[in-house]
Image (tube, rainbow, N blue to C red; front, side, top):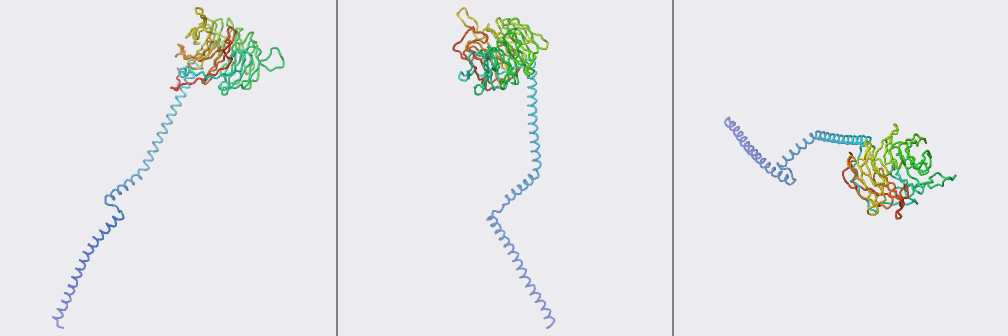
Length: 475
């Protein structure tokens, strides 16, 4: 082969190689275009598949990203949120504790204020306006005595009532059932071998503030001491020279005060079964007596027309005047005020610091008799709900009257009448103020001036329901 041919041959080879390279380039280009077309077609397929499989659109992806960011923020802020919640709970708990402390302080302050007012004799809770007049059918009548009821007492827990009468018996009643729990029968005078009891009219009774002792006094000058729970006789006190007409225990103690038609006041220690002392001052037979926690007692002097306050440690007395007739009944409202009734028909409110009545309500129960010869109905019994403005009075004009004492005991206003036929010889409020008990008889407890035949010798339990209203205030 010639050099020219040799030279041409490589040239042909080179051109062949170039020609071969060109299709390769074309194939690569085609491949590239095909790839692009394939990718483009593949993208379309992916979009279709993505649509079929509910893949996220760009907007949805953006929302999901935001939710992820929010989720990340909630996790980060969770501790802070819980801390704030915990602090809020602590704040609420502290506020509740502060309110509770404030309430307790108010309660304690209120109680202390009441205690101070009570000690000063100025406590007067307002309850009278809340009391509703009971229906006649609501009054329960307990019958068991043969003669007129003369006196009664209620146990401090308001579960039982003791009543005594001119038939010389004492009956213990259940307040809930109205059944007799015990009867202390009459005994015959100067008869040996019989159980202890009374042989003459029982005129007065008293029960200690702890409900342990019951004392009863009669016309035969005796004071009998009983265990209130079992009605077992414990002691007999002698010393009075006439009928025992009034008995009262000093509140919170077993010190007993007694008074008599012999005009004296005696002091006894029941727990030690001992006599302490005797005080004199009244000019006529003493009709009634009452006491609270102070070491003193108050008496109604009957025909001598005086009310007296006896200061036991000083052995002194204060004399009060106001009624025109015989003062037959008396009751302490609080440590500084009392109410009394007389046979001139008047009811008086007293302050222990003033010698004249704060209020004198004449003809409290009306008039009786022929025209031109009218006489007032005697006030035979009085009672007061302790440390309140509620007072009750009884006579023989067929009703018990309830009264409201004005603020500062400056006036006495009638509330309503409760119909009861007969002599209302004794009235007592329960400690809770839920009921009033009346001892009713055909005759007056101290005599036989009149007789009401249609009356029943009975114990009447009168419910005192209260209307819903604001809590009772004190002044």
